[in-house]
Length: 292
Image 1: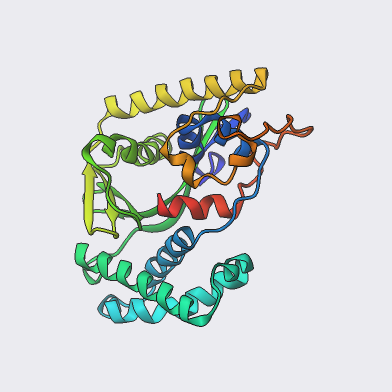
Image 2: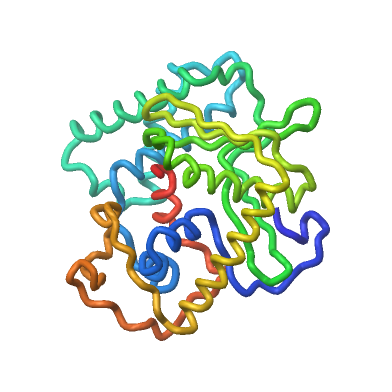
């Protein structure tokens, strides 16, 4: 939902952040540069693609009448949604060498769907919105945007923001990082709809755990301050053309190691054209977020 759609004054956009892009910069500024400024391609992974598939099935599941939202119905949706995914992202077919590998992979997706049914009964739910795009432009020109997996609204008007994760739940020391994405969404919803969501809910299908949090105004104002400080740091790095690498155990899964000085690679020259902040992000970036 755009600012214009909700009657807010349109503001000039100087930059744009999604939860995943903000997370990139906090994890490694050089990763942020390569994904957001250089727009380097990322090879699809079976885990991220499986996350995209499971999300698609869970979205379609709620198109069915309540009584038909069963594990069997969800399993029946896997094959047709996989066919749709191959049409929109044909590169994913290169992840598998034969149909036996595909069958094993689809079986693992079915297990994740079974994990979802262990956490809640969709026959008792009627989500208000699914895969909802949300955005707000702050007075300084920073656009915050993202896609909310599911928004539940109680008869009282209380909102619950739900997000599906196909990985495993984080340890206690990493819960704050996991909740950052949800607080980001809560802040945007508060700014655009005037109501602070009552509950944030992360559903981890990998180990069938649920992480919940009830935000308040102080929480969300802190998120705003953090995002503004983060954008100032991004602008400063852009002006200096200096996005420093931040080595960690996550480097093992990074596609850009050949261009990382910390990994013995050669830093790429600054691109001649920097993308417009409103240019849509690549599809593979959204897919990668599904597994996070």
